[in-house]
Length: 393
Ligand SMILES: [Fe+2]
Image (tube, rainbow, N blue to C red; front, side):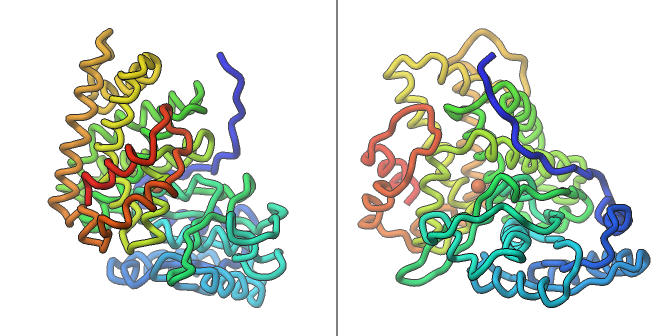
């Protein structure tokens, strides 16, 4: 077996109603106060906030609340960190989608850091973060980014000098992740479809990553099998808690595998797209996944990269939920047919064509040139990346 290192992994609390047991867990850890970061009004609408805040009150844990209803900007993170400084609470709890958890994560890191978070962002700032942060608990209400298990927070600023960049450190992986299917069941179908495809893209890209190892292969392979079994069910029937739990677990695992072995071209392109047009991250990933996978597979076939093809076949058998046969082509065919079916499913939920979000044909060459391959297992030219984007224009 090749050498590898496994990074920090959050303690996982999984199960229906587990969110309401979190205050007891915080109390056991000796925390008496928290800043709770949340999104818009969906927690109120679904009665989750009332139930959670009364569970907090029962354990005598005091809290201040910070809301962020969009992808966090540096100003949002700085304000959340300032709220913690002034309230001197023991920990930060993020309850929401990836943007909320990223806000909580970045705020927990900025409490003891000098200046604005912008000064520490990759490719934007010049300062290096020490990695010191205060305790952080992540409670995702969508199943997608895996931010509850990753070491980075994505911060963006829109406008002519806009950016979408990460604050990253090995120490930023949350201490605890709480996956409660009964909370996630309220996520709407269109968000469920897009964020589910984000998680699936993360699993597939880390599974075939040039850095993949025994540990990430076991985790991502098993999670792909679960997502293959439950993804379509969860989009059609959001109240199916078995399916919700499987997708929540898949997203959490995708966070672990991506934090350990990285991602590929779909995320390379989705990152650039996200800073240019207002497309949800999951939609950007989901719309590109099938075409990008086909391009990589064709390239691997042309170059005789049998190990790469075998890995894609492994993924195909896992997603299809069938026993691995010694037939690479069959595995790859199963994988591509499922990915194209899921692309159609995404299209049916909301237009997944990039032109619907304002992408122009003339912008494609530049976006393709700026899209990093990350850990994609084949080399792709700018023209090849552009042809993938053009197919989903
Ligand atoms: Fe992603």
